[in-house]
Image (cartoon, rainbow, N blue to C red; front, side, top):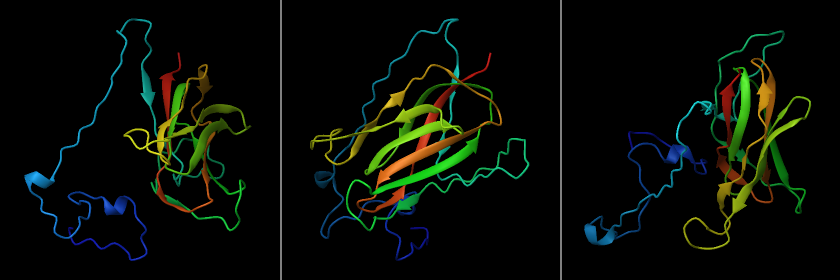
Length: 205
């Protein structure tokens, strides 16, 4: 599509899913009404009525592939962030519970405020994510829930949900560095992972 070539060694990921692409179909498949089906998404939305006790919050996306680095001697907050989106976990050479891939990224916070919520995004093989301060103080831990069936939303072997954390409001300051950590089982390799944590933050009073 669009004359874009995919490298022969590309194992799969976002580059396979640009606009107007579709899944490969078997030979003889005719795209006619009798052989197609409609798919739908169902959402459940809950809310509370707005009043003066409700404090607005912003949701940020912190990506573990962000290439940002603090400049030596810098005290300002740089806005130069370049996220690679995808990365690969290679299979370990030994077997057992010790096959865990750990990826960390330290990022400078661009705001003053309070973290009041957090949830991570992981793919199959994920075993948890965490956000903490430079001194190791934990702020949020988000763990995967794996399915054990074959019905939609409970597919065995796949992550069907991530736990959320609602800490007591954690004060963070503009320029403070927090560390994001993602853990994966590397008993087998995993390609084109896209992992981020989404903290909900309220402004400082």
